[in-house]
Structure formats: C-alpha cells, structure tokens
Length: 218
Image (cartoon, rainbow, N blue to C red; front, side, top):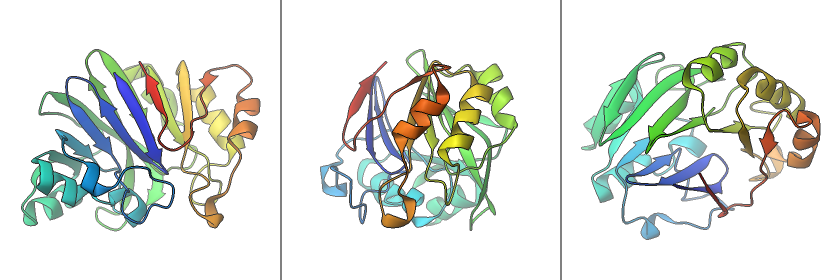
C-alpha cells in the first residue's frame, strides 16, 4: 500500500482500492496533484466541510464515480449534487466499495453537521487514522485501543488545531507505531515545526516527516 501526502490534510491511499481523504487540491499552494490528474478513485472521505478539507471531493466523485463517505449532512449534500454517497456519523462504520471507514470524534468546528470528525480507514489488512482538524482529546486513547491503527496523520499547525506540544501528547494517548504530522506550512497562518513535534514525541512513536508529494509505504 502507498500513501501520498498531497499536502495540507489531503491524502491519497493506493492499494487494491484508491481512497482520497480531505482532497484539497484546487487552490492548495503546496499540492503537486491537481484535479485534472485524478483519473481513479473508489472512495473519498471528508472529515468536515471547511474548504481546505472538503476541497475537490464532489468533483472527484463526479469524475471517477467514487463513493463519498462522510458525516450525514455532508453526504446528503453530495448526493444532492449527483454523487454516490454513504452517510454516517461518529461511532459508525460502513463498508464502501470494499473499503471500511469508521468515523471517530474530533474537537473542531464545522458548517454542515456542526462538528468535524476523524476517520479510520481499513484496507488490505492495514488501518490508517486521519485525525482531521482537531484539538487534543482524551477520546484518542480509545481510538488507539479499539482500532489499533498502523499509522496516524495528526494536524500540528497550532492555530486551528493542535500545537506540536499537544500533538505529542496525542501520540502518547494513541500509541500508534508510525505518525505523520500534517496541516502545517500551507499558508502563513499555519506555519509550524514538524521537527519540534518529532523532538517532543521522544521516541514514543516513529515520526515520519514528509514533504508534499512524498509517499510512504505500508
């Protein structure tokens, strides 16, 4: 399985299926991938409807026939635009196009649905946790315990979500073997230090610092 950090919070997961999470491509100044380069997707997961997360989700679904998976109100809006959609809510799990998606708590505002969520994606025997936008929350303890992710992607920008210090505490709660910091240095308002985060984790997990467009293999 290959996971590409497109930049900001956008991920592309490639295995037996292709999954996008929070596909903010158009207007993303660090993204190496544009909507015109997306020709295959099976599932698109959206953690909340802020523009830097909803991004090109509807366009990708319309272009590829992918299923959009998100909290009820976002999925309902996607269906109204002609997308295939699976609506769900926090605590639920659905299987869409051969991909298992669970929505978990996040501590962050949103428009549709009123709250952001995190997502746990299970594919080809691997489990990926994408925290979405969130502050530090004790629910991360049970996310790690129940889903036992192989890798986690945590926001560290320190303005709209966790500071590196709080993200390091999240790692302690989650007990995930591999962690990738995301959601930083896209714009001046979200400048942060992945190295500071890595130093604060102090070996409790393997912190992998990527550049936009980099790929990690599981």
